[in-house]
Image 1 (cartoon, rainbow, N blue to C red):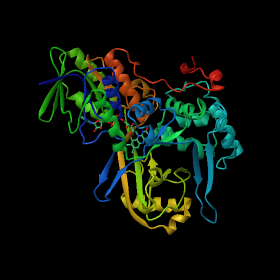
Image 2: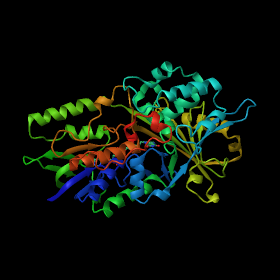
Image 3: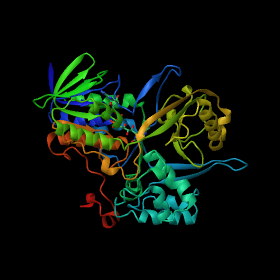
Image 4: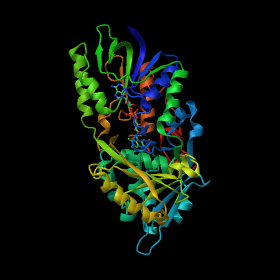
Length: 476
Ligand SMILES: Cc1cc2nc3c(=O)[nH]c(=O)nc-3n(C[C@H](O)[C@H](O)[C@H](O)COP(=O)(O)OP(=O)(O)OC[C@H]3O[C@@H](n4cnc5c(N)ncnc54)[C@H](O)[C@@H]3O)c2cc1C
């Protein structure tokens, strides 16, 4: 039987990050992935009916230091397009034209880098801007917000206006935490607001992969192999049994594998399934498992819907835009971002994040209203012909950072010798994102070698005035 030092189960961003860190430090690593592609939830595939490679848009931010470092190691730096300007569109209609506002990074030092464009932004009035500035100033010392307070309570406590919430805070909360304010802890929203708008001017830069996601993350698997690790596809782990000598036996379909260490890099519900069926050697270890499983029951999913549209011609020059006051929240001009030849027409994606209400609706009840809303932002679309359309529903897109969840997010060391957890849902200080997943994988790799933070990239250091204002540990 094959025996390996470390088996990483799951080839999402967490598993790839753990395997790359361990292989890079000279450990013998094998990564097992159930599907035919890596990337996990950040994946693309050939849609049989559409005859197109499709994915749900994933973006990264300048503050995602572990993910960016991983991408750089994997040779992906040239496959991320970075943007310093964000466009917010208010819909037109009833004789009114669409109105655009831009928030753009300037050369001013943090936290003043967005000030000029923020003051000019037409989507907000003076009072809205003042309340936003007051809200942000309360966060300037760093990430010290309570995990017990939800974001709606924070809006009330800091006197946010209805329009400041609708045109600024709520779009950001939905885009980064994939749920609405009442379901999100201020600990994570505070982290996001601080990293994006205050700490360092690069923190809020928006990065968009320029190739489909499975192609993107295939370079991550190639990195693991280049560093000496092995990657085995279509190798779903079905059962794990602890041996009397402490090693772990893994069953994948027909084959068996022995490992001294395992990193389970799976979503919480799939980790719970494997943990439940795991054979352990002592009642004390059973008790550790039961405690872990009871904490995992507090996690809930939040869905995400992507509406993919192919037109015969472009109808805007924008690469992407925030869409205000409508059910559709974000527009991505995928053919432009990917640099497709003009004769391929225009491929766009509309996003509905945190879409619990829309998830059960039939296709027609999502597509029809979305097309009507798109026309209110881009009247030119009336002259373009819709060639084909698809709707991707991801019911288990992310976990929600519900208030009070922090204590139940487990560390990467489980208390069971040789068994480690990774995955965006484990304790990382980050919400359900690719950066959270990358951090979790690196923390798990650190736990395997006995120094949890060994592979972690530092967060962006506070810049400019933020060096004086922030009590963030990165200041030191
Ligand atoms: C539609 C959508 C949009 C999103 N947008 C963004 C975004 O813009 N920015 C962002 O940062 N994040 C975004 N996210 C969240 C992001 O995708 C996740 O947080 C991140 O990819 C989680 O990575 P992970 O490795 O923890 O888990 P996963 O990606 O779920 O990886 C787990 C892997 O384990 C494999 N696996 C499962 N069971 C087994 C088994 N028994 N044996 C072997 N392998 C197994 C799975 O096939 C999978 O490949 C989005 C998610 C979705 C779904």
